[in-house]
Image (cartoon, rainbow, N blue to C red; front, side, top):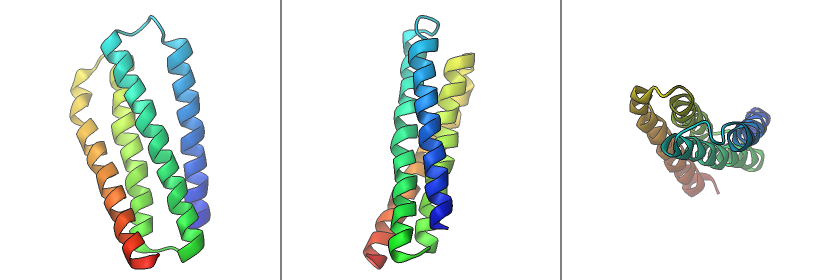
Length: 124
Protein backbone atom coordinates (compact mmCIF):
# COMPACT_ATOMS: atom_id res chain seq x y z
CA UNK A 1 0.00 0.00 0.00
CA UNK A 2 2.95 2.31 0.63
CA UNK A 3 3.99 2.10 -3.02
CA UNK A 4 0.44 2.88 -4.12
CA UNK A 5 0.33 6.08 -2.05
CA UNK A 6 3.81 7.09 -3.19
CA UNK A 7 2.65 6.62 -6.79
CA UNK A 8 -0.64 8.46 -6.25
CA UNK A 9 1.14 11.27 -4.42
CA UNK A 10 3.63 11.64 -7.26
CA UNK A 11 0.85 11.82 -9.85
CA UNK A 12 -1.12 14.30 -7.74
CA UNK A 13 1.98 16.49 -7.39
CA UNK A 14 2.78 16.34 -11.11
CA UNK A 15 -0.83 17.28 -11.90
CA UNK A 16 -0.66 20.22 -9.47
CA UNK A 17 2.38 21.60 -11.30
CA UNK A 18 0.73 21.20 -14.72
CA UNK A 19 -2.55 22.73 -13.52
CA UNK A 20 -0.72 25.56 -11.78
CA UNK A 21 1.37 26.34 -14.85
CA UNK A 22 -1.74 26.27 -17.04
CA UNK A 23 -3.39 28.74 -14.71
CA UNK A 24 -0.39 31.06 -14.58
CA UNK A 25 0.31 31.04 -18.30
CA UNK A 26 -2.89 30.01 -20.03
CA UNK A 27 -5.56 31.74 -17.98
CA UNK A 28 -3.93 35.07 -17.28
CA UNK A 29 -6.34 37.80 -18.36
CA UNK A 30 -9.08 35.31 -19.22
CA UNK A 31 -10.61 34.93 -15.75
CA UNK A 32 -11.96 37.51 -13.36
CA UNK A 33 -9.74 38.31 -10.40
CA UNK A 34 -12.07 36.37 -8.09
CA UNK A 35 -12.10 33.26 -10.29
CA UNK A 36 -8.31 33.39 -10.67
CA UNK A 37 -8.01 33.55 -6.87
CA UNK A 38 -10.27 30.50 -6.60
CA UNK A 39 -8.15 28.66 -9.15
CA UNK A 40 -4.92 29.55 -7.31
CA UNK A 41 -6.43 28.40 -4.00
CA UNK A 42 -7.25 25.08 -5.65
CA UNK A 43 -3.66 24.70 -6.85
CA UNK A 44 -2.24 25.59 -3.43
CA UNK A 45 -4.38 23.04 -1.57
CA UNK A 46 -3.82 20.48 -4.34
CA UNK A 47 -0.06 20.72 -3.90
CA UNK A 48 -0.08 20.73 -0.09
CA UNK A 49 -2.25 17.63 0.03
CA UNK A 50 -0.23 15.89 -2.67
CA UNK A 51 2.67 16.24 -0.24
CA UNK A 52 0.39 14.83 2.44
CA UNK A 53 -0.27 11.75 0.30
CA UNK A 54 3.47 11.31 -0.20
CA UNK A 55 3.97 11.61 3.57
CA UNK A 56 1.40 8.87 4.11
CA UNK A 57 3.26 6.60 1.68
CA UNK A 58 6.59 7.33 3.35
CA UNK A 59 5.16 6.66 6.81
CA UNK A 60 3.76 3.37 5.56
CA UNK A 61 7.28 2.30 4.56
CA UNK A 62 8.30 2.91 8.17
CA UNK A 63 5.39 1.52 10.19
CA UNK A 64 3.50 -0.54 7.64
CA UNK A 65 0.08 -0.02 6.19
CA UNK A 66 -2.53 0.77 8.82
CA UNK A 67 -6.18 1.62 8.48
CA UNK A 68 -5.56 5.09 9.88
CA UNK A 69 -2.77 5.87 7.43
CA UNK A 70 -4.70 4.41 4.53
CA UNK A 71 -7.79 6.39 5.50
CA UNK A 72 -5.68 9.52 5.71
CA UNK A 73 -4.28 9.04 2.22
CA UNK A 74 -7.67 8.37 0.68
CA UNK A 75 -9.18 11.35 2.49
CA UNK A 76 -6.43 13.60 1.13
CA UNK A 77 -7.09 12.31 -2.39
CA UNK A 78 -10.84 12.83 -2.00
CA UNK A 79 -10.14 16.35 -0.77
CA UNK A 80 -8.00 17.13 -3.81
CA UNK A 81 -10.73 15.92 -6.16
CA UNK A 82 -13.62 17.61 -4.36
CA UNK A 83 -12.01 20.80 -3.03
CA UNK A 84 -9.47 21.65 -5.69
CA UNK A 85 -11.46 20.06 -8.49
CA UNK A 86 -14.58 22.06 -7.69
CA UNK A 87 -12.55 25.28 -7.58
CA UNK A 88 -10.96 24.50 -10.96
CA UNK A 89 -14.27 23.72 -12.61
CA UNK A 90 -15.94 26.74 -11.02
CA UNK A 91 -13.16 29.07 -12.20
CA UNK A 92 -13.13 27.67 -15.72
CA UNK A 93 -16.89 27.47 -16.25
CA UNK A 94 -18.30 30.15 -13.95
CA UNK A 95 -20.64 27.58 -12.40
CA UNK A 96 -20.64 29.03 -8.90
CA UNK A 97 -23.08 26.39 -7.64
CA UNK A 98 -20.11 24.03 -7.53
CA UNK A 99 -18.96 26.03 -4.53
CA UNK A 100 -21.34 23.85 -2.51
CA UNK A 101 -19.01 20.87 -3.09
CA UNK A 102 -15.87 22.69 -2.00
CA UNK A 103 -16.52 22.44 1.77
CA UNK A 104 -16.98 18.67 1.48
CA UNK A 105 -13.45 18.50 0.07
CA UNK A 106 -12.25 20.73 2.89
CA UNK A 107 -13.81 18.35 5.38
CA UNK A 108 -12.00 15.46 3.68
CA UNK A 109 -8.71 17.35 4.14
CA UNK A 110 -9.46 17.83 7.85
CA UNK A 111 -10.35 14.15 8.26
CA UNK A 112 -7.11 13.19 6.53
CA UNK A 113 -5.00 15.30 8.90
CA UNK A 114 -6.86 14.04 11.98
CA UNK A 115 -6.38 10.42 10.90
CA UNK A 116 -2.70 11.08 10.24
CA UNK A 117 -2.34 12.62 13.70
CA UNK A 118 -4.04 9.68 15.38
CA UNK A 119 -1.85 7.29 13.42
CA UNK A 120 1.22 9.19 14.62
CA UNK A 121 0.12 8.91 18.24
CA UNK A 122 -0.56 5.20 17.94
CA UNK A 123 2.23 4.04 15.61
CA UNK A 124 5.25 6.31 15.81
